[in-house]
Image (cartoon, rainbow, N blue to C red; front, side, top):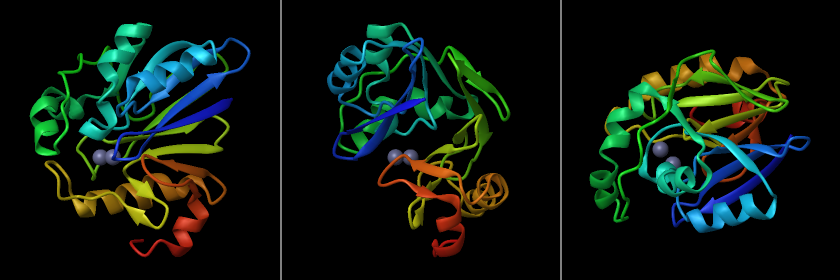
Length: 207
Ligand SMILES: [Zn+2]
Ligand SMILES: [Zn+2]
């Protein structure tokens, strides 16, 4: 698996592009904005995007959904509990001072243990609510990488003061769903630098 990261918008959202090198098929995780930059990367690498997977539907993670879908025809996937957030994207955008045209509805709703296939890449869905009601994390089949969205950051955790957020639910998600994946798993958060489960288990002040 080849991994490319495009950091987008003033929210500095990590948009990940996962590439199966053999087939050049790709998954895009959290296209938060600046679709031109994401699409340029996709074009430069000569990729066929099969799906856009959203860890959750906050405005800083969905800003380029519409354009990526339009340009690539990729399926959009997220948890059903994120639908209200997605459908209020324009209003939420105004709240955060960004203009977002209403994104399309998802093509596939994800639940815990679902698998997403892209060439030789398999992602497994882990429900990790707390930062938002239908927040998910995605772990690769080799157990090496966990895309954690805004659930877990290097030295921090997601905020829980937005609609549908809940602190205890978030801590429970991290402790019962993410940390047990193992200390060696590399964590790729929705914002900021990568870390590992072991580092966060030992040093994250919120845990
Ligand atoms: Zn968020
Ligand atoms: Zn975010």
